[in-house]
Amino acid sequence: MSIYSADLPQVHAVSFLWALPALPALAALELALAGRVVVRRFGARAAGAAAVALTGLACGGALAAAVLLLPIGVTGPHVLVEARGALVAAGALQIAATASLGSFSASLALVGAFATCAAAVAVAARGDDDPSGPLAAVCGVGAGALAVVVADDLVLALVGWEIAIVSTVALVRRAPGASPSSGAEAYVTSRVGQGAWLAGAALLCWGLGARGGDASGRMTVTADVGGTSGAAMELRTLGERPPAVSVRPVLVGPTFVAREIADQLALRDDQTHRPFADVLAARRLGPVPLAPVAFALLLLGALGLAAAVALALPPSARSLGAMRLAVAAPIVASAALAARVGGALGHPGAIGAWAFGAIVLVAGGARVPRRALRELGVLPARDLGAAAAWLERRALAPAAPVLAFVALGLTVLLLAR
Image 1 (cartoon, rainbow, N blue to C red):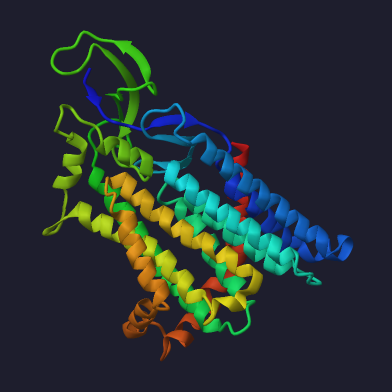
Image 2: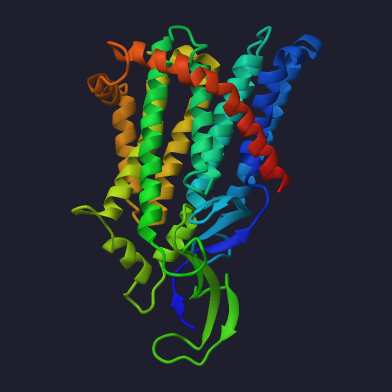
């Protein structure tokens, strides 16, 4: 039996990570579907109390995760994982309902949850006659953003991404001075970013290749993780490996799960040789290496989420009033996507590249993506505003209720599993 070695983070199993996006999602669905009934029967304060209570619970869960990840008495990196099996398992295509948080992503989750809760408190305190609409949008933004942060599967993160963008556009359209075309431009930019993200994830999954194993091309190997996170095992070894090791099973092969990608690329069969990372590095996409292309597409996708938020904002973010705090949540989610990419592929500079791109986008009012979309000229209209409005009217508006019920079904499924 071959035993690889790797410096893997210690894994701590928990069962509350999916509750972070599920709680504000429950508030958003309740207010969107029955908010007017709640206001009419129980008053505006009841709607505000429900939103604040559920977003506050999500904020408390994010704080608990951040506290659990504090490096007190723990050596090396560690991560919280909630594994709920596979949502889709069809051969090589497997979409796992796995949630995970490391130290950095837990900090982002706490910032996003706090911003959502603070925005809900601010909206509830305004004294509107019917605050259910703005509160539903605020909770939807937070739910989508937190789903992006905790989702370990690169494809499953797109579900939270879609919820976050739909809710962000619904939120900013309630602000004075907001134009319908800006929301439509955000939708189009989001689709471009999602396409780049999905293409990068597909290339990365294909590039990991099949090395035997089951029908999906995956197999389990044993890794000496050199710490307390694996099972203790005594071996008679030769060479540099100590006789006492700590082993852990590691899945290798095609996968969309960022943590599994990072684990298999870190495996070594000696001090320098990383066989699975070498397989990915040897893959080519025509004349160019595949790994840099996949990395660039994933990073472009993460920036696409930030660009969509910037395009959705009205000319003055101050016009959002009390709701502008919630807009920070999808920006945080965009940073979490970049962190996932950097962690999976071992590129610590990914978050720095994302930060530079996001600053340029937000400071420049998203002029670059707006001009790029105008120059494409592929939509059935003379200008981008009319084209995006056409796309929203014909495709996105009919799909919004379907997405809401799909999100509700996924929430119930994840909590019931």
